[in-house]
Length: 135
Image (cartoon, rainbow, N blue to C red):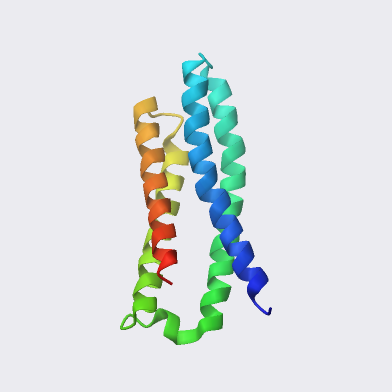
């Protein structure tokens, strides 16, 4: 049993992050088509933001705990696992940077630019899942 709960929490947080991105994308599209005004869209984005940053923090924290548990072998770039972990960490950093950039510029950018940010964040998040499958 040991660290199973940490892995569970890690996967749950990652699922909330990525699943939330998919749900948000479809929700915003539906709200726009229904004629929702910008404040309604912003309220949905703010609520998701709180949940997603929490999920990312839990995922990063539990990921670090798992790395420490596995020791240097998990970060040895000469192994397939080490390479997968490295790629996953690069993608997590990229997703976090994109999410932060999106959040900081959302008030001043066009709907198209915000959509591009969201699409990139989703693609990178799916890449994180793909890298995780190889670990």
